[in-house]
Image (cartoon, rainbow, N blue to C red; front, side, top):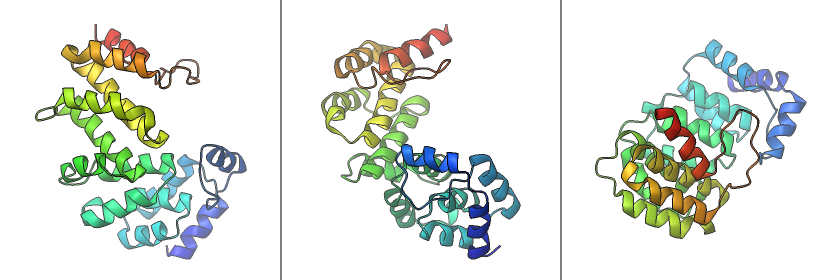
Length: 221
């Protein structure tokens, strides 16, 4: 499929309810509103197509970018391309897809972590804290947990919501996986109060750090 055929297919999959939901959640107007399942089915049909993925990304259409994420070849992207793509996507849902499918699968992703954590670009910072959250949970060697908690306590209240979300995840991962720092993580969560009143669907866990930490720790017992 070429670019125009792919865009036409995506447009034919548009669902007004999905479009409205994306807009409500902060998406820009450049989208069709295809369901995630339909985008996945289309990606399986196309399979890997790196050149098409890059063309789709350049359109800045959200559906096109979601599809691009699924058919791109992460290892064929340069570090500069990765960074520019992370910075350019402001819609959190698409940004998180890019992180999970591309950044996490990228060789030597550690090269980005501290650089992005300290970036003034909110989307790079969001991704940098996601990488740090992953290190805290799965490979904490070399991570200064105490310094991370210092930064969270002092910086999190004044950061954009996009960055707060992944910084909060890092706080939670400290509380879950590092018992020696659990009390401090809980105290920071209580002190900051971020997501304390976040609406949560039945059966889901609150993103409020103390609730999230205690729930996950209780499951370990």
